[in-house]
Length: 350
Image: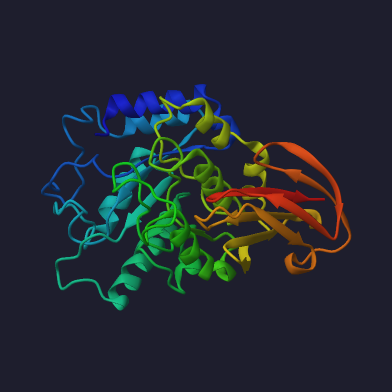
């Protein structure tokens, strides 16, 4: 249901809500912007009813409002809706269109290839071709790889790359915390497997945030956001910025959590599983440590004894609760935490 009017309204909402100033500075249109065919020259055509003035005016409007602009496109023969609008064999033409429109971010979504099908060889060759053309044109464009699992060549060419399937959301089976392979926790588990490859300009992407009225409880949403922050994941909003409830605004605008996300020391990882609880850790610039303790269990176990030694800590720390933006004092050696099922504590140790 994306169109020109909705796009302009969302850009305005990102600016007026404070999201832009908090760091959400890309506006990206995913599927739904294209017509159903390429033209005779192999060029992408914009949907004439949804976007009567084309794409460039929206990119210009984003830039005027201090945002960068991105588009979803596909490298195969067909898009995800089975329309023959892929970039296969006409990559140069499509990239030149994106440059002319003022695109700053390309999400290259594997989708469909009906000319022999995708193999690991031709998939790698195709993504490398896109990268080489972007370099040839000296285009300052974020290259977002979307091919549904991690591959060892991603850091060579990608800015970010998906490490798993699409996350469940309101329009896609409803968001869930831990009941399907496309729930928040299974997606995070997959992303965790490739943590060592993140950094030096490349970051793993576990997919969009499903904060808001997507199907998660408020506590699950807080854990979800904190988890994406500690994993140094791209924080791509999946909600409607025009209609945010106060609690989702508070989650998404939590600058202390965002600061952990934007610290580029490493991708935080799961370091401990203990009787239904998980501990995730990220070492920050200057030696501070962020820990996320999650009660993954659905059983009413709420008390967790966080022992310093198990979490790689030692000595006395000033501990801060990042989700609540409060200090919980100085502690030495251990800490008792009350954490309800499908909830968590996001802590900073100074």
